[in-house]
Image 1: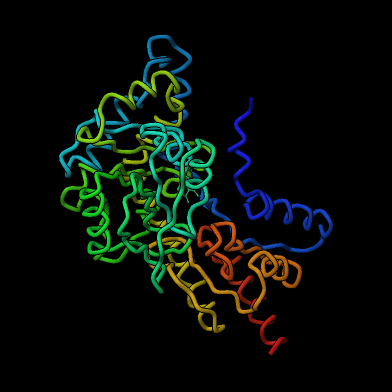
Image 2 (image 1 turned 30 degrees about the vertical axis):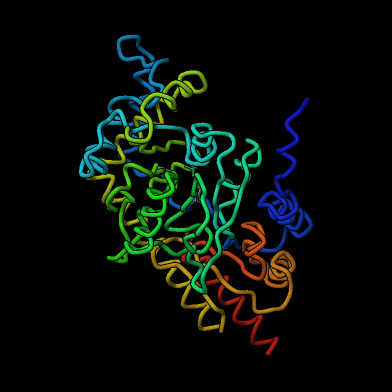
Length: 385
Ligand code: PLP
């Protein structure tokens, strides 16, 4: 008997269906210069000190005196220590509470296995679709928070067991400030719930009132697991390496047991590269890449606003969330924009029913492409008006 819950995943309003449409369009019109403002992937290569560390790691594997094999289920000690020393020692954690993995996408699903199958899972709508799809595939019940007019999640009156919070948020591009996050931590403490705090875009934060980590909020270590990734910050989207903090107050036994039986650890080469991410010379180059992405999203935000669009986000994340200017579905708008001006945007419906009427734009591409794309948008609306 197969797991039919996987079929609950919406395949019509999915990234894959938008990608299939783009693929077909490109095949039919090879002469057209299609520009993507939709990409969630990066446009800057892995920085040189990280590449050099990975070359060295490959050589380690050629000699049994430096070879690394099975056994590092939760990450090589050197990487767990580098993560702790650079990011989490200030909150009083130990290496035992740091877990390295092969991507936050997998972590979002894997962590659900720590909790009872009857746990009630609370998400925002629109949401990063993986939280929802992971829950469906593992037969967990999903509920959605109400949002206020600024797309902020409203703390509910009812009980939920697990709350996924993505901040800075994909797709709406905003980040929770201290007050908002404190509200959620207090809710979780009161309800004995757990927050899975997806903080993969933390490097994009510039607002002073946005906490760098959920553990800046008193009591969070009793109720929050924080996820981070090397994907967007250090261009590890293809390399695959992520990490999370699972405080001992929540669990120090079950997830380790689960992992030993399910996962043989992230790639040694990727992990050695990740250690080098923390070198000062890497950090300098990575910060410059982030600065360019932020400049790009800021340009896109201003350009859409100048064209009369309602725009959210883009200050503390690489994404903006834009309201359609035409009264058609988000997939129809996506198709229309692709066909009319050869620009790819991400239809809001991919992120949930409340994403209908919106589209997501990414600043992870290049500013040169953004300029061309916005010029096309400008002409398109000039001709329409
Ligand atoms: N979490 C969010 C909110 C994301 O937007 C993404 C990727 O787009 C991920 C997690 C996936 O990260 P990783 O590449 O580490 O699997």
